[in-house]
Length: 150
Image 1 (tube, one colour):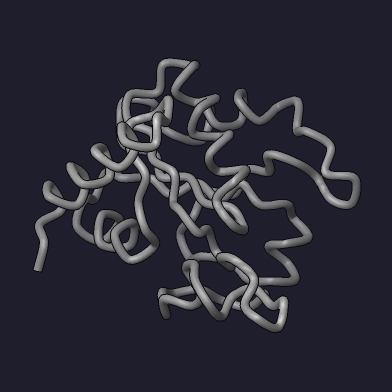
Image 2: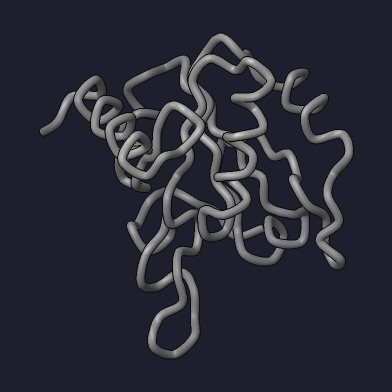
């Protein structure tokens, strides 16, 4: 089994290869391992309240909307809330539905001098499967990681 250090190194290399502006990009299972073993790592779920209520939540995640349902308007207080609710000197792992908003959040936090920002690739629900449904082909849920229905 890979060590947390090896997982983070792989995530950092992945981010460099993809030209990402933040520290690293993790697959859901890698993110879960980091959260289990790196007690200071913080998970921030940037999905909308509606997504959290209707689709499910990750126990222990800090929930800060990047965009609000139904119009997906940007949350003007996102960075202030992030600074208040997390420690910018410790690793912060961002997750959303599919990895796009969490990518944006990780980049924004990096610009605000957060030391170690990671995006969780595939997000909570991942990509759509052949039937157009999310949550089955990839992502946190499909990997069988802990989540609860609201």
